Length: 195
Image 1 (cartoon, one colour):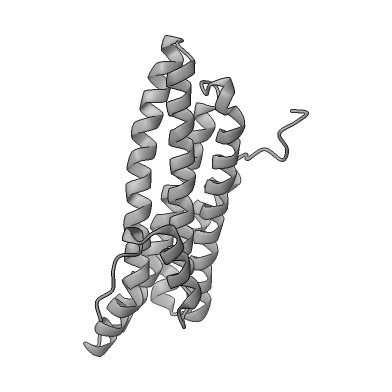
Image 2: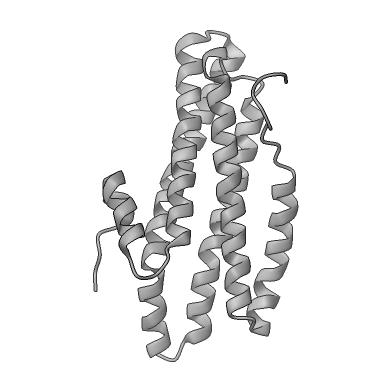
């Protein structure tokens, strides 16, 4: 059964597709959330360019625009990939390639977590350059992206609980541990006032 890519749907239709389905699409929801966080961070770079003329800030803002545009595209691709992963898994299972199917379902959240952590780290680095008008918005984006990274890690951990095969654990547990360490390095603010 072919379905429209989730990233091509309107926000309302994507939310309905996730909410009205008979199986949960945690990966798709996580990746879409990360794409929105990247878009918000990109907007803070746009605002910085529009209202802060300092050359160092402009260079950093242009770099941030490029990075977040690439991140948005990557997260939308990952959302589409995850939304269709179950159908691909069923096809692999039918061909007797069950382990490959399980790996497919673990690759997505691993890649999502790695991309979200990298994006959040880039956002944190941009704190020194973001314009005053969008400083708080950058913090919102960091918080959203850190949450997406945590969600993707939990999804990978869940998959390893559901399929505790030695081959999968050997393949993904080291990545999971490294990603947890990287996630711990993120520092979303606890509050906006009084910093």
